[in-house]
Structures are given as structure tokens and as C-alpha cells.
Image (cartoon, rainbow, N blue to C red):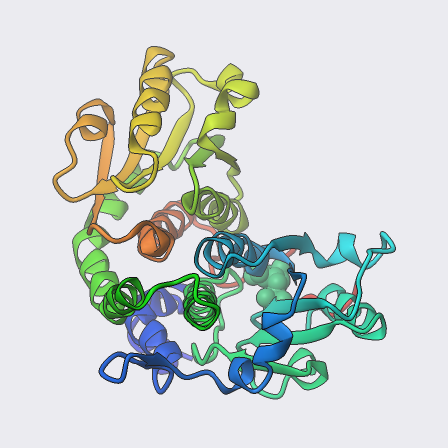
Length: 370
Ligand code: G6P
């Protein structure tokens, strides 16, 4: 096992550090920047299904569901196809309206999640075209779908998903750009600039790992006795906030909630005092001014702010108690880059609390029963 961990203390840490490679592997053979194309046979062979779709329904559970929410932002922004994202467990029991004009995308790291599988079967029975985004090759979900794309992130052993999540985001980004280019909603110049930027994302992840590894350890030390955490973000980073909160609760057993930053005033603000740490994802290209006012409101109530900001940020950094810098990216890529320090933060808080990070209590890597 020590050898499998490759010198890291836990699989989770190893998998966090594998992300420059796993994201690169997800794009390998698909993102051909010199030729100006995205090659995805699963999409291309069924392009008419996507082109004629009334809508895309994404179904998933857990972390994969968070990836799905970001997929909604991506596909709606770049391909202008309406997207709905559903928990598989809710979808399967509410007699959903599905027709043969719907495309259903299931996202599952393991490809074995019982609820996701059952929801897919239902969608298939009702005539939808079903597409899989799985990590485990030849898994049950991969086998029953009409087509799909593997994430190729490599085996994920830590129960808390890390590299599978960023690989799922990478696939969803490729799909959104490919569909948008094909249906004319994404012009060639923007497409070219986005795919060149995507190609460089593994380098940015590497940079973030280098610049935030020690920093997140130091921040973590100050929060080992916290009992609650709030995670806030807007737009693409709202689901990133949900995922940051999920990581923390899964492995450290500290209660954490993710919220869209603007919803803070509809409830969570009542919880803020000097004992409430708030992780806020505030890149420059994501409704920055609005986030600035959220931070002001938090500081007025003495909340402890841990801000994830772009390099060179001034306004939020001046108010925050802790600052984690990430490189500037287009907004659509920011959840990939911002998730990395949040994974590290959750990891180190859990380690300092003495928790079993790779095998958290009561959780399973893959939930194959209801
Ligand atoms: C379990 C795992 C999570 C995972 C979820 C969905 O709860 O602990 O890490 O996100 O299942 O799993 P899937 O394999 O379908 O992505």
C-alpha cells in the first residue's frame, strides 16, 4: 500500500497532486489545439441527437452532481442548449417527463452508483438518448449507455473524490465547447482562445499546488476546532463552493454548507459571528464587485474570511483574514483551479483532527445499494 501511495501519506493527497496529469490525460487525444478541433467520438457519432435535443438532463449523485451543476453553466453558456441537473435519487422516483427528444447525461466516477443506474434505465425506457461520463472503464453505467466519454483520471482510491471531479469538469468543458462550435453559438476566434487556455490548465493546477500546499496547511491549523464552515461562490463557483463544503464534511466531520454568495442574506448571514469561518471563492472574472460587498457584510459581523482570489487581488485580500491566490483564468475554468486549494484545505484540517481521510466513517467509495 505504501508503494501504491507513491510516497504520499494518503491516497487522497496523492490524487490531489495527480491532477495536473489526470486533467491532461482527460484531454489527451481529444483536444487538438493545432488543428483547432475537439475530437470526441461519443459526441460526434451522435451529433444529431445533441443538435435536435430539446434539452439535456444531467443526473448524478454526490461530487458528480456538483460537476453536473458546473456542466449546466458550461453547456448553457457555450452551446445554448437548456440543461437541467438532477439528483438521480430524486429523478427516478418523481415520474419525470422524458421524451425521445431529451439527452440524458449520467456522471459517475465509479459507474456503479445504484441511484444513477436506476435513473438511467428509466430515461432509456422512456426513449431518451443516454450518455455516460464515467471514470471506471467497462463499469455498469458505461455499459448501458448509448455512448459516452471516459474521464481517464486513473483509479481513485480515496473515498472523497478529487481528481475524478476535475476530470469530470474537463470532459464537460470539452463537450460544451464542441457542441457550441458545432451549432454555431461559439465563434471560431473564441473557440480557439478557449481551447488554448484549456490546454494550459494542467500547468495552472501545478502552479496552484506549488503555491498553496504549505499555505493551506498553515490555514488548516487555525481551524481544527471549528464546528461549522460556510463556503460561498457565485456563478461557476457556486457549485465549487458546494463541493468545497462537501470535501470538508466528508473527511473532517465538521459541518459545512455551501451557498450561492448572494443567498447569504436569505439565511446563513444569521449564523455569522467571530466563530464562523467562511471560505469565499472570489476570482476577478466572476461577479467580483458583488463578492466584495458579501465580504464587507461578513467582516461587519466579524466572520473569519478565507478568500480564494486571483493573483494580485487587492480589494477582497485587504479585508480577508486568509488569502489563497490562484492564477487568472476565464471564468469557466475557475472551478477547476479553485477546487484544488479547497481540497488541500479540507485534507489538512481532517489530518490535523486525526481523521481517517482515505476511509471516512460511514461513507463508501461507491454506493451500489439504495
Ligand atoms: C459516494 C462517494 C462520493 C461520490 C458519490 C457518487 O457518495 O463517496 O465521492 O461522489 O458516491 O459516486 P459516483 O461513482 O457515481 O460518481
